[in-house]
Image (tube, rainbow, N blue to C red; front, side, top):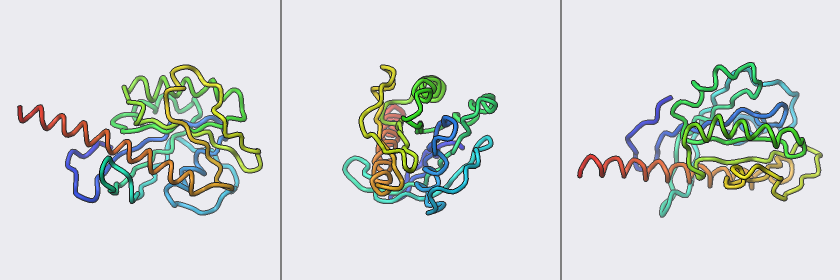
Length: 198
């Protein structure tokens, strides 16, 4: 999954990866919702095996001074450590990382430090290319305050996700995130092109 270097006027293909999830936090349900793969919320739990790749087009993304669209490849990666040997291949050439966790489970707050080190820090991704999603499961009584996170995680943007109560707010925040990723990639491409010219 390599990033294409050419930008088209209204579309640009980008690869966006979701980081491994903490066990049973709802990452797959969230990925399905964001990609319009399914409208069903609350289906039976089935853990992700390795990775699922969801491809979809996302419209009306704010990319600096203009709105644009992009084709997204959202990699729904298994959070089980038995798949850890696959993670380097999953990270290669990713343009962004979304870490999904359940803020109601104290161990998840510690586990996301591992995901940060593995998927964000080791790739040299910028803050705008990352998104933390505190995903609240149905009936959990969502607390929308920022959970206590490690200092390096406090720099990253965080949204709360509750697909039963505010699903379109979650989609809108994800679109903002995609717009940020597109803007960063466009700026990087412009710098590379300028360095070739000069």
